[in-house]
Image (cartoon, rainbow, N blue to C red; front, side, top):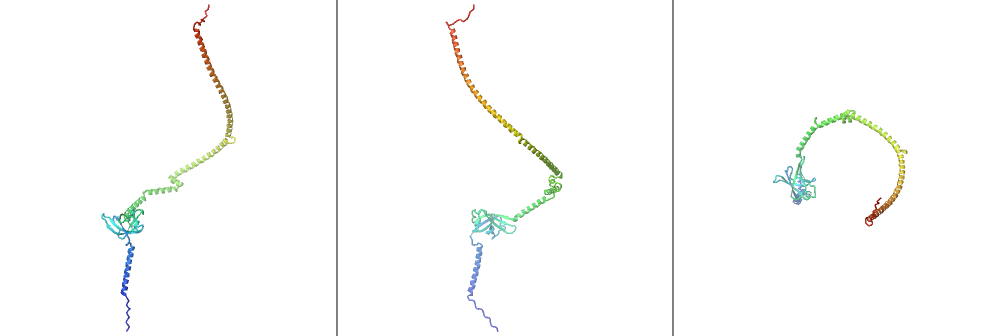
Length: 325
């Protein structure tokens, strides 16, 4: 008969140990919940922001509001206002509220893929901070709403492209003209025929150019002849025995004659000065003689007048008539 197994010895204070283990487990759970709540910002001081939207489609409680890609707030409640608009209540921690200013713009965007995103844009960080409980409108941007307009624009673009590439379109006519131009360029005169429209016109232009070249050659020959004539003329006029040399000699002789004439004129001037002085003296003497003559004549007239008066008075009167027998 096998021996009976012996029972394990009892653990001392097992109830106390179980109670301690249970307490540690509860403390661990409480600590974990407290850490999670702290990490989620439950114990942080917050300020309330109210966004007004035409509708709250796509918005939900718990979604984040981002600034430059970083979450700075969370939607706490969505409610319907008295005027029929949606009120989105967002809690923003105080440490992140410094990014919100009175000029901040709020948008609610919906992309083609993904959920709605609420974003804040602050252009001037020096503006006054946004107060607690501020109410701001939110701008909606729905990319899916642009799809019908995009489809309509694409349809119009395709229709325009179809009209442009049609057989009777301006583009087809332009391509036909380009093809005609390239065909003309394959001819004898190349691009010139293509530009002028035909080979005859190109031939006329080439003929005119040849004539112009011949005319320019003739002008060159004439210019050379003219240069030779000018060289001979220069030698004839300005050479050692040229006209200019003889002219210079003649001018030198003329200068000598003019110098002699100038000396003669100086002598004449002296003679005239002396004659002028003699004439002045003669004129003065003539004036004195005239005055003296006038005085003598006046005295004679007085004497004659006095004699006449004496002859008229008696007893001095005499008969001076002679009587003949």
